Image 1 (spheres, rainbow, N blue to C red):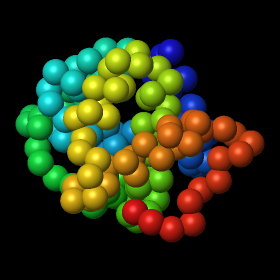
Image 2: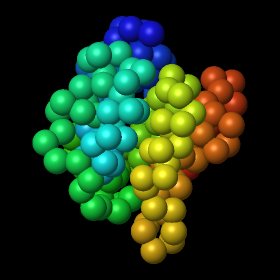
Image 3: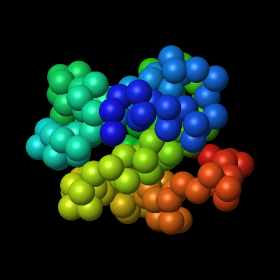
Image 4: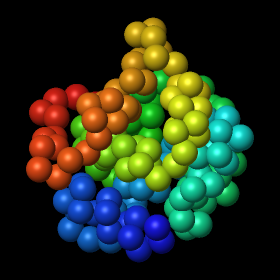
Length: 148
């Protein structure tokens, strides 16, 4: 898959009006995720992505393994994407679900293992809700009504 196909698929799934909005959503999600997970895990996850997309997880990140919770993740994505937190959280879920379809299962599991799943850690499981529900499906995927 190349850069244009990746962007086009995200634009379609998120029903965004243009390429710019799609790139901003991808950049916000993957840059913030890249800051949260260990550098080696970011490198592994990025390896199967188009060069321009992998940059957000790796090259654009100055410091990996930062400690912040789910709420802070959503806040950071929202700020970079310039959208409200509920939209940012939904966009992140859709983007992570799409990434999951492109990377080896072991690399995606490594991502999951990098993020805490206890209630005390603000429930990172929310990031994987679409993946855990069976993945994005054009005819069945409904945007969650609430949350961030």
